[in-house]
Length: 412
Ligand code: ADP
Ligand code: ASP
Ligand code: MG
Image (cartoon, rainbow, N blue to C red; front, side):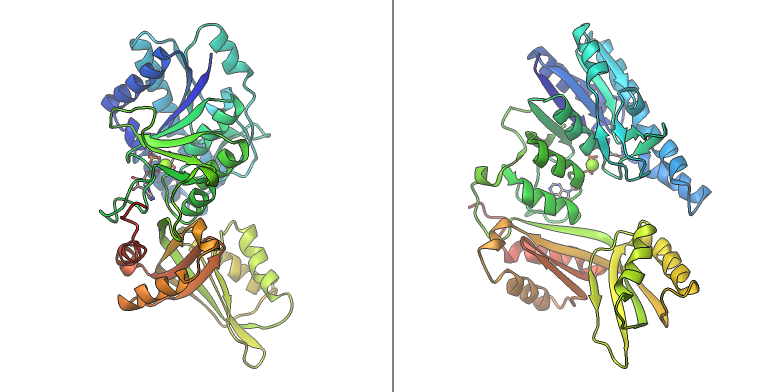
């Protein structure tokens, strides 16, 4: 029988009523003749609570134990979803990551899926089971320990299962009815897109649009998974939501197709480091070993052989970054006068494959921000995106102003 993957995010399984509602959606697809693999998140708020408990217990925690704790939210919803389906007379069984097994790397808290052998679940389908409910976000390392895939990781679990089982489609059920031109919670002018190209979705996700985890889009692109985002709160047709697809299949042609933001960024400046060959390696090597995701980097003009080095990273990695830099200073690898952390910044980005062929996007972006009196602290560009770091208090204003400036509320 053809296989369908259906993923339900935190708000879609937030309580027993919602789990029942999601199970009814699953029943519709089972009735159509699909064998369904359901991927569930933890109930909304649960993972945050678990992460909070870990940090409170141990500020520089052992990531193996972090994973042991934070993976548990999904175990609960997987079991409850299987029970709910059984109550509806649908043969269903739950699976934790290690039982499948979802084999991952041992990079705890940010593991990558390496393989999902389908044999165990396929055997159950062959015996008449119609729904395999799998706990999202988790897997097992080569050492046999529980791993997690990074926040939002259930999306990636879903796409990886769709690839492994050659599913007809991977439907991501969430609390909005598709991918919008920007977060509909920030701008009421945000417009739902019927289709979006993989490349654009990849940029939007990696720049903060949390509707899909970045890695899930990468996987969908690589394995050509038909990926759809839709609402678990509305009646659905086969055309509902947003289809993430190849560039050729997208009709719109405009320079910018979406605005993304990332609220919790930090700008770190190492004041007065020696301007010598190897200095960047001496700084960013230890940061990378400490697991700090450095994003933007600027090296200022040198004076008297010394320079300032500025980089941005997620705000929750500031403590790790400081520790890594202090360690490198103590061991004599680098020397600096001071490390200044500006933890009140946000990143706002304009994304569009149309930028490749249309000029003037950067100019419009900077003029728009300047008209609103917003100071730009750092700029980064690539072929299909322009990002700026600004004071966090202006973030929503910047998103709305840019959405207006690029006329994203209007369909082509
Ligand atoms: P889930 O729990 O279902 O995984 P998430 O909270 O991870 O849901 O992702 C859905 C949220 O993503 C939406 O509620 C919305 O606020 C946010 N979001 C950010 N950018 C976008 C966008 N461009 N389109 C749609 N949703 C977006
Ligand atoms: N529950 C996990 C998180 O909140 C994974 C997910 O929901 O995708 O990040
Ligand atoms: Mg999510």
